[in-house]
Each structure stands twice: as structure tokens, then as C-alpha cells.
Image (cartoon, rainbow, N blue to C red; front, side, top):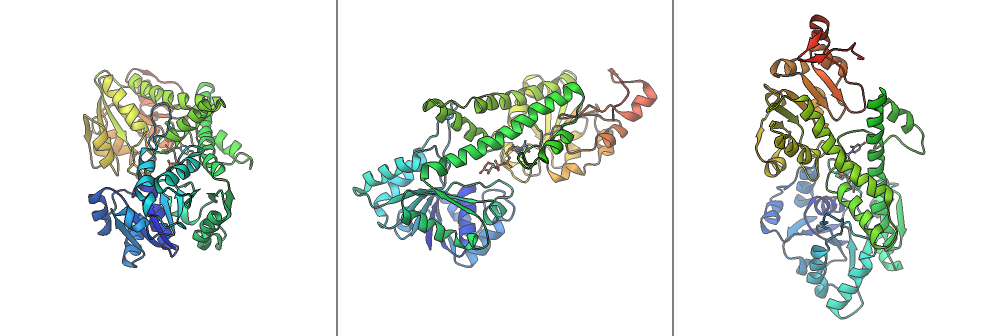
Length: 453
Ligand code: UDX
């Protein structure tokens, strides 16, 4: 099929490359000339494992092209996927400006049998609203609008597309559903389940799924606080509850709170729709508040451990591993609070470009241990694999102080304590430095309790 995707961001690019891989003929359009020009040379503006190779392969095979001329290409398409941005304001209201502009721009040139598919995350009822818009700009009612939300995680987007747990399609007429089924046939033939229903249900599935996943994270973070208070271990608790098949073990890793381009925005939008329609979502409202507060609370823990005007090394600024994305990352909330408290921040991230643009007054280092040099406190904020194998002995030697906050629970408490670090984890007992504890009785003003190792 001839498919046009509008928007060459994370979702648009991944969708385009993957649909081309399924054998369709793709043109991905964006209004940004420089981006399109770079993409035609197979230069990818984002870091996503495997995407650059897949785009290169599909461009070389002639199945994927990039263009700024959405009107012309949409006019020849069997289906047009809308994957432009849907930013939200503080209250969670979704801004449809880009989606509406895209629809108004291409509407008049569409063939009457072209299916318009909403891929961007939008509030329930948007597909129906866009149907009214496209009818108005064309002066007919020929174009059908369907919904096909994405469930792609950054860092594993291609695998999530190709081996999806399920494909969700929303269509308000049989032909639209048949077109979407045909587009995804190469995947469903391989056994990927497809869930079909009305557009409004597909739109709600996207938000409800993300809200429930975010609730799991918020819940386990609250459990982590309780574990800290009563001497429990959240990793053991998560393992124990996750083995109940009704609960499942995924999304139970306690950490610095969820971030990224989806969960914070989608939970705010979900709560906002609930308020607007008189169907409040108190669980999600509390979740949003708790997640914001968590980042502030963790910053306070660091500030409490650091000497005044001390130096903090932050390892990891992306909102999670395997992405360069810092949108709503814990680092963007925590680092400014540390700076306001008078602390000097040194940082490392394997993909620091976006973070460098967002954060000010941070000293960046190419090597994690260089960032730790002379630091009073080191904080792990992102679970990059390279931090799991950090040489803790060298970290302890290069640091000035000895506090290590592992906000992703990826390091060995035992090892950290053995090399003289005071290990602070999430939802697990602190472990005091062993070597110094035995020899000295106190460590830099800390009363050394029997280490609970
Ligand atoms: C998410 C959804 O998973 C995806 O289906 C949706 O389409 C887009 O939003 P993404 O934002 O890429 O994907 O990241 P995800 O891996 O889901 O993590 C979101 C946040 O939750 C990150 O900040 C991550 O660190 C945090 N998280 C995740 C935890 O703190 N603990 C966990 O157990 C899992």
C-alpha cells in the first residue's frame, strides 16, 4: 500500500521505517526542511537503537522517502498516518494545533478513498472531531478517520512495533477497519494479536494503558518509601508480588519517578479528560502529584548528604537508558534543585546532547569516573548498562566524599560498602562503608551503625 506518515519525530520515523519493512511504500513528511534533507541522506535526528540501520535499509530499497511536500504525497496515498506532536499544557489539556494544521493542509488534496489514521496520542473523541474538520475543509464527507495508537517504548521502539503485544485499531466503519487490517497483515500473519473497535475505544485504550503502567510505577515507589521506613527491600517485595500472574512483574522497578514524553503527559491528559467530563480520576490525580513530589524529595536527600557548596556527580541525565531523550527526566527536576541549594553539578550521560541543551551550569564529562572526581556525592539517575559495571573502587578513590545514591538500584551494595562508599539505594537499607567502619568507628561525621549489608 502507498502510505504517507506526517511527522518525522520518534513515532513518525519508527512507524515509517517499520511499515516500509512490512513491504509498504512509504513517504514520511515533515515541515522541517533541514530534518528532511538529513533524513534523505539517512541521517537520523534522534538516538534509537536500530533505527538508523532500518531507515538506511528502507531508503536504499526505495521503499522509504522523506519529503516536505505533504500535500502532493498525501494526494496519492491509500492511507495517511498523523504522527505530529500533541503537546499538553500544565493542566493536561492536549494542544491539537499541529494535528489540525496537518489535516487542514492535506484535506483538500486527498483522494476520496484515502484513510486518515490518527497515530498521535489524542484525547477520546478526537478522531470524530478530525472527521468534522476534514469534511469541512473538503466540503464533502468522503474521508474516513481511524485511530491506531502506538505503544512504542523509546529504546526498544522497533522491537515493540515488530513484536507488539497487540495492535489496537479504532474504526467507525467496516472499510476503515479492513484497510488497517490489511496494512498490519504481515504482522498479524506472524501471530501479533489485533484488537479492533470504535475510534473512541482505541483512543481510551492508549490513555488507560499508560495510566495503569504509570500507576504501577507510582505504587512501587510508595512501597519503596515504606520499605525504607521499616527496613524492607523493595526489590524482594516487587519480585514477590510480580509473580502473581494477575499483577505481573513488569513496571515494578522503584526509581526516581517516571519521566519521558508519554507517561507524565498522558497521565495529565487522562486526569484532565476525567475532570472535563465529570468522571474524575482520583488515583491518577494522586499519582501525578506523588511523582512530581518524589523528584523534589530525592533532591532533598542528596542535599542533606552533601556539604554546603559541595560537589555532586550525576550519572545519567536521560529519562531512562538507551535513549538521549530528557523530556520530563528526573535529572531536569533534580539538578536545578541541587544548584539552587548551592551545590556544583558535574554530569555524565552516554547520550548527553539533549541534556546539554536543557541544563545550565553543569560541567559535562565524557567519562563517568571523570564526573565523579572530587565529588562529595555521586548519584545514579539513569540505568545505563555502562553504570552497572562501574569500577566502584576507582570511584571511591577519585571522589572526595563517600556518598553514593543509586536511584536505580543497579549496583551492588556489598561492593560499594567494601570500597568505602556509603551506599544509599531506593527502597533498600542504606549500607555504610565497611572498610572505614571497622577501622575508624566513624566516617566523616557519620555514626557508624552495624552495617546491615
Ligand atoms: C511509554 C510506554 O511504555 C509506551 O507504551 C508508550 O507508547 C510511550 O510511553 P517510554 O516513555 O519510552 O514508553 O518509556 P518506558 O520504558 O515505558 O518508561 C517510562 C518511565 O517509567 C521512565 O522514566 C522509566 O524510567 C520509568 N519506569 C519504567 C520506572 O521507573 N520503573 C519501571 O519499572 C518501568
